Image (cartoon, rainbow, N blue to C red):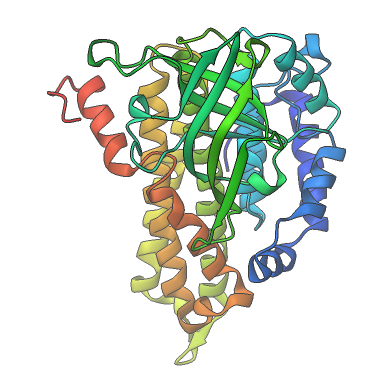
Amino acid sequence: MVNWSLGEEGELLLSNVRILMSKYGESYWNQIDWRREFPEDFINDFFKAELGGILVPKEYGGPGMGAREASAILYEVNRLGGNSYFLHGQYYVTYALSRCVGGDRRDICLREVVRGRRAMTLALTEPQAGSDTTKISTFARKVNGKFIVNGRKVFISRLSHTDYLLLAVRTSPYDPARRTYGITLFLVDAKSPGIERKEIRTMSNTDAHEVYFNNLELSMDDVIGEVDKGFGCLLAALNAERTMIAAELLGNARWFLDRAVKYASERKVFDRPIGANQGVQFPLASGYAKLLAAEALLGETLEQLEGERAGEYSNSLKYISAELSWDLANVAMDVYGGYGYASDTGVERKFRETRLYMVAPVSQNLALSYLAVHSLGLPRSY
């Protein structure tokens, strides 16, 4: 597995995660998925164990840990059969907030996160803009010193259990010459008047919603960073998001591999284990070799996350991790045969959960386009 190099405090953190996961085993996650429920008991215990605020800086009462510790937790939850989809937004939003200049609202929020009282998610995606973030059209118009927000977001995760939204809007019209200018981030109470939501039923248990902003009133105190200049802070959140989600995908990959190897060793057909057949062995061995390489890239990406090559590494890692996890999901399904299709094995649940990340939080093709343009110097295709 990954050599996290966390030190004594970090290893204790992972030990607490493993203890928590021993209480919430795979049957719990299978039942939550079957009933389409939010894992509320798990999340409550997660916050009680002071795991939700690990990225909050020390000046706000937090431990001041980083993306490495957060990624290790997400990896471990998935490796042990859980679904860290319900956790990752908390981490990359906190990561962005802790790095962006903000007012009293941000400071109060960070202190509340430490006390386990606030859950957060990012509100960015729009139906028409999709991956073209600079083309978002939700607009905050300044009127008499207030911002009046109107617009629509889609596929906003965990919204029914979110306290704060990190909301990305336009405060100036789109200008092709300055595409990233005019985007502002707000920290918004998710229960504010002027916010309506409609659940989107998806392939897996996501608690995803379409969100409508109808004359939502915000103030300068709600601004994170600077008005019109929020893209840099947003980019920090997105690079952290891709890295952390890649870590949980590698946790899934490890889970698929471990489960398939165990089943291939025990399942006998024609009086011999099916794992004795090269047709079963080779896909597993190939997946293992690729997993070792991907886990090494994860370590390097965490080193680069604060630097100039953060976009290059986070997009590369997300692309490779999604491909590998999805490949091993299919290998595990093949090894299990009909039993993999049965709900109580957990294979088909994680199969569905993993498929999401071939299109989110950035599509595989867009990750490749980014690398083609920014790393290889090829002409821009988008």
